Image (cartoon, rainbow, N blue to C red; front, side):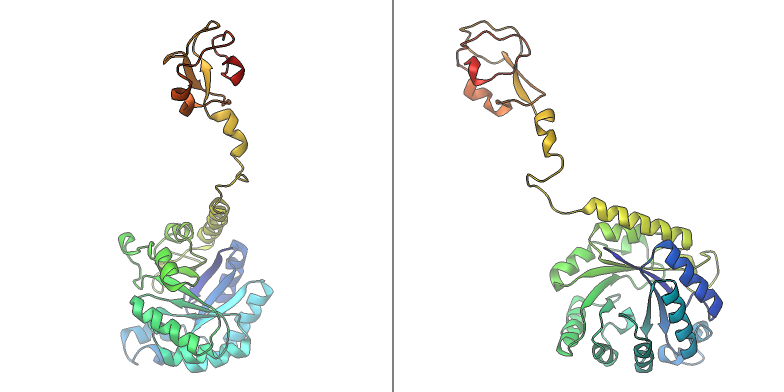
Length: 319
């Protein structure tokens, strides 16, 4: 099944109770995991910069991490977080999270990747901004450091991107090129792109999550709210059923209808005994029979041993 991650990120804006409510709502919507971001503002931006000030208030203190992990456990939903520093990996290891998400900005950051690799846990590696050789380089590095299994997440690191920038065909391309599971990390408004990614084979879908898409700041405008997330999960589970498996064998469920829907050869009119079959004597229509449309050339010139009435299905007994 497609693993659905509700990316809360820093949409909680430092409000612990809001973060807990988001966990509850994501679980109710059917997501498999909630994901936060473990950072100190100085891990990401220079003090005094516009970005520094925008994210500083959304830092999660260690005790807040613990309370959110407890809330996720109570809601029966996986607790994940993206570490932005070595200290964050150490903290998340104390919480025994089940997997790590690596942000696009750190896709090629071998210092951070080395620490995450040492945990041995599964890794979701966002590939925004990365060239194919950079992705391959990081995968080789992780493999050399005996990391857990890696899923590459196709991602467009724009907030938000335009529809024609998503290039979702990259999902099957990366699966062929890398030989590992591939998913999709979404920054596109609404849920259409995330659902489309599953059609193209995404095994993991991460979408930003908020309680209010109309709220200013943060990632709210290109996030899914609880109703949208529930609809996304519904669509994904339906798409999974639709995708099924490649089935062109005798086990396909519509095979029994072949005799009903395919064409057989029938007399187009009353034909007397001894008649020599010629074009126009036979009509190809339902139901199927012993002879079909492809047999007509072989049958022309054959003599009828028994008279046929219009609509009779041609069988060897008539010849």
